[in-house]
Image (cartoon, rainbow, N blue to C red):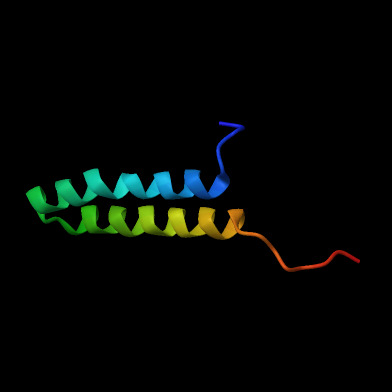
Length: 58
C-alpha cells in the first residue's frame, strides 16, 4: 500500500458504491440510501486529504 498513490486509493473507495447501489435496487430502503451517502462522504474526505495543499508554513 505504500507504493499506491493516495488519489488512487481514494478512487478505489468509490468501488464501494457498486454493492451499495445493487443492494439499494433490491430493497429500496432509506437506510441503504444513507449508506450510499456515507460512502460518497468518505470518498470526498479522502480525496480532499490526499490532494496537494497550497498552504505555506510559517
